[in-house]
Picture 1: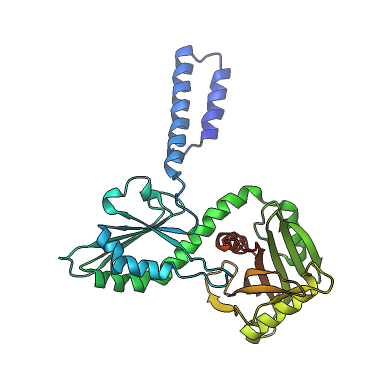
Picture 2: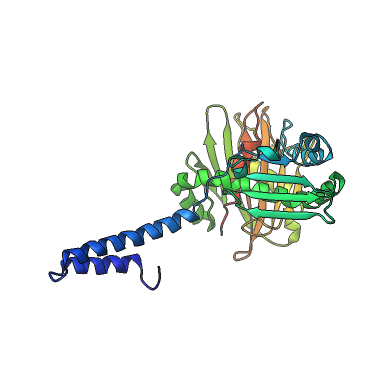
Length: 352
């Protein structure tokens, strides 16, 4: 539409209807015009909507020209990287599951897969070609096609891109969970968080505030066979030493000992430093700013309980505070990777 909004069309239309001088034929023609305007706007909006992406949680679809490529070094390279064990889990679970089809089976449904890698070998190709696109056939989606003259060259190109791909695919998984969480936001918890800390996260229904004291908050969600927890704490930021691995573990243990009790008197949560040592990495693209990620196992002193946790620590520059948000799970003897991804999704919604 140009220079006139739908509202102005309607206002003009109503004024004409009230006029006694307008002929019925003119009124009918105007009704048709207004209907066409709305239909045009609706069609444009419809064009913008994309299908939702498909695929299992933490799944990547690898498309090759034939089974030999999947079973050979191309498929091996993709599996070796993406099917590594996820760090910090008590039982072995892969970061991603890699599914496979051949190129001749890449129909419209498979083209909508959320995490898509397409490999092609073109012997006459002088140099590798990389083509990629966000939301190619669906949303959220990332599709990448790598073409090379032989399998060895293809693997070399893949190795140069795999870290970036993992970050993108992780983001797609969080986007999928956030689409589910967003309509279920727990406004009471979010408002309490804003009042206490001055920031918010998209916390879904089912969580409640178990502790809110001394700029420490524990959000709990209890189900019949499992428990979820989010711990948020804020401390003064003095120097970069506050972000050291030793310091982060020490602070975590002091917070959990004081505020996260176990089921028995005198029992409390602590960090496993013997069997599954915490692992750290810098996360420059964390939405609230440069962050330090810590993954590991929590145990309960005085009780046989434990599980995985992941935390992100970031500086709030406006208040010169160090903010840590952690998610942890208790779900004994069951798979926990996808549940931990849910908690990561909530934490990655942090906004000052």
